[in-house]
Image (cartoon, rainbow, N blue to C red; front, side, top):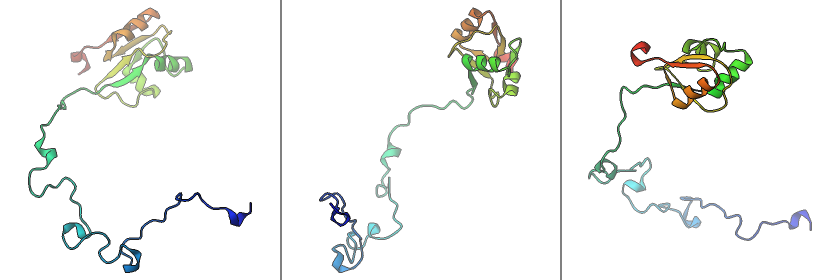
Length: 156
């Protein structure tokens, strides 16, 4: 076999249709758009338009609710706290929301910090945060530390 004998499989490479390029192309003159009307012209965007009647997406009932005053917490897993303690970036004696931010573990406090129990935790640490899962409190206690959760009134 030589280089000039190479060819693609039959039907593998189909040439694209060049629309509105003269009568010899088979898609000339109107370019497959028909005669006159909004859709024959350029600059048409009529998605969701139903000829003046109320569109379907507006007729359907709305679902769900976004609570305007909901609290957004910065979430931290125990495994990350353990990692930062091991690296010496956190002091296990007293871990607060401010020390977590200062160490770079979280970027900002938002409405408070919530600790979750994902991962291993072995340090004997004293942690004071806005919120924590029951499993996280249990895991810290099991390691010999204490996890205190501040009440909503104290956080404000």
